[in-house]
Image 1 (tube, rainbow, N blue to C red):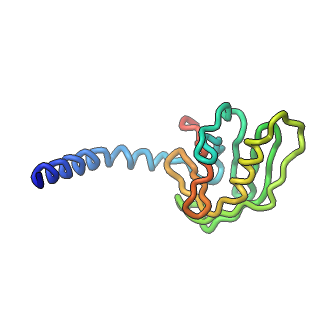
Image 2 (cartoon, rainbow, N blue to C red):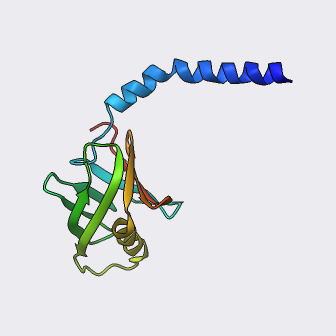
Image 3 (cartoon, helix red, strand yellow):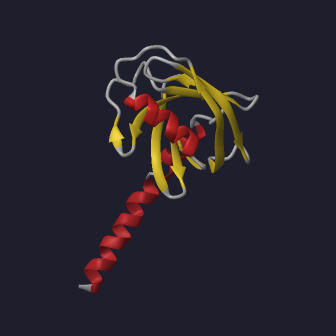
Length: 146
């Protein structure tokens, strides 16, 4: 039994190691936090349907965040310890939005709340993960081809 376990462990290690170059290539082409348009794909652990043209943010060099909700534009300020790192603390503050009439603003309200509650982030190639402590609030994705 121990020999079988050792064999499986060695096989898994070899398999993971063989794709190391793939991961390095992906990381070399990873999207930066600043200047990338990030589109919401998950909120509170649930997929956000129809968000391809809505629910997006962009963080600029001058520490501003702009974006769209369901039918409103949003903007605010953002502060980060180091925008070049792939993870770290983040604070989105003074978030405001236009006041257009929307039939259902539930998702937009939750999106804005998640942005304001986020206190740390992680970047994983094409994904921006926003957390409050260890709780995942939202997943945003960059266009892989831009």
